[in-house]
Image (cartoon, rainbow, N blue to C red; front, side, top):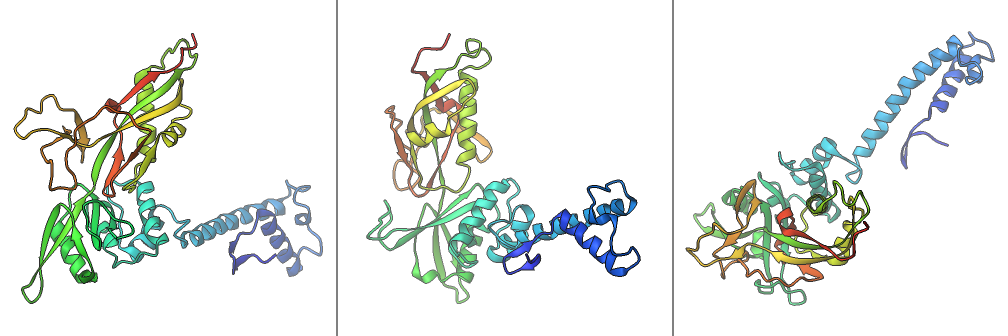
Length: 354
């Protein structure tokens, strides 16, 4: 079998192959005769020549591993860490990893664009490359697939961000994208002055976070009559697990109770049998109302009252909070899910085991 750099990629030599090569080259030199202890290294493991060959081959083996690893990094589907960023994310898309962005989130973003054959001039790629933007997605509304609030033929550029220079993004779109084919929609307006003193208006949509209110049905297993396993620890583990699963650019997802139940299988000391859900975007308050009783949740690193006075004219309006639990939640194309322990509750649906 051919080894080294082949049309199939790098085929690494094993230690046994390297020892065999070493033995063959020594015999070709003639100084050790037609037969050496390297012909049977397992039998003569303590022999000095075998020891020298083993040490030299081990170093060669490490080099082979390094070459194989570097070759694999040339494939964006296998690349990871800084290799993914420096070999693929930056040169192909202009995407650098944000300081607070996890490598898993960065990898998902890069693979999402490259697997869809996106280029550096795509509006969503340009937006995702801006400082402070964790991910971006362009949404199209068509006659066959309409988007609520966007007429057919319109488009929306959704950005998951906490601090973005929208004027700079407008300038980037003007310089690098065929903007004339798009009719933009969104809550944020940014203007760009052209070379001939014209003025172009762009609209962008900051992604809207929607907390998912969870009702987790199930029963505690017999662990010292619940012992250290209590409702608080179960809720915390459930929220942590779901937050890690949905920590990406999954705008417009449909969340189902069956999917949630499967994700919460194997909780410590608790068997999840079903999950009910409710949307919890910012709660709608009348302007001027006291927000001291509003639920406080995290957004962009700050704890804020999860409330809004916006009732219309925006894609991120506040909503009345109903208490009807559903088996599924359909998010809008500019919304993404998040979870908080204050919005998770346990319902014991079967008798405890002790």
